[in-house]
Image (cartoon, rainbow, N blue to C red):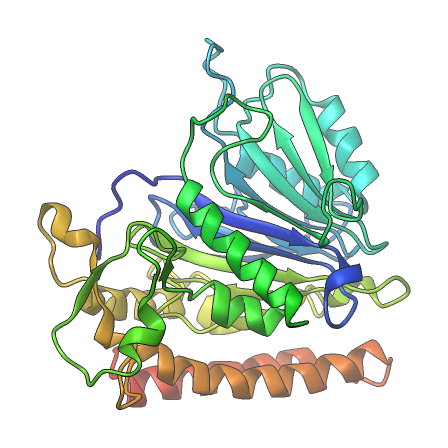
Length: 396
């Protein structure tokens, strides 16, 4: 597996108001960098609401959550901030995962979340941006430090003229020019601006064109476009400043609900592994703990999909020593022959998108039957296993 250097808890995140998406539903998006390469999804029924969350597979009890949604239509994710609490001497820190689980247990709205923040004992142990959406159309980022929080509302044109807000690893309320992710922030800004101008602000665009973006704005190069036109070969690029890089462990996008829709039908699109080697699968809180086998922690201590994704990621980062671990063999992902890992995954994903959209439209209309979600998960497990084992040549 590739080595993560500087980016232990770094992430690229965004919230989008439903007023600006193509289908009118709000979204939250997170590309997660972590020291924990093994990720899984878990269903919970231990709070006021049931919920599904992204966890570190090593966290066998699922005590910490790094993004998810609950049955009330409330969803949350975070990114770390490195320019707040700079002069704070408290030892209380890194409590964001615990807090997000508490929020999913208890909150149905942005106002509930704000009340939860206000009720936290100070210092809170937070240095983060929390992105939140709810079933009433609320969409906001909260820049949080040990003692205070500041809300940035995606529905407020003065704060989000185009209906979206992006955060990487520095806070606008923190000390200027300190933090990480300034280049990633620029990349995300360019992507969102273009998608908005082209009226393409939807989950498919974000999963394919954003999460798997290979643009470097400093060098003015788009490696995906460039190497998709070149025959496969021994080509490498430095992935440090890409949205998905050597320390990226997973991604999650939650497509919320419109006001009046069943609140347990927020769609949790998750890549439980390195996004360039991991397929995106849709999950719902509806029908409880019957999640796809591929994304759930098994007896070996990891989700099967994450394990297969890591096997492919290892092939993409063959140089293990020192700085070599930052270089990705780009033609493993994209090439003229269309045999790259991403190219094959996206063929499968387009089929999943089509079937999932048809299914969830039926469920939103109230015409679904009990057990249909579980049946769909069984189909997903079969499709994923077939693609990875036969077309991509991995071992489950």
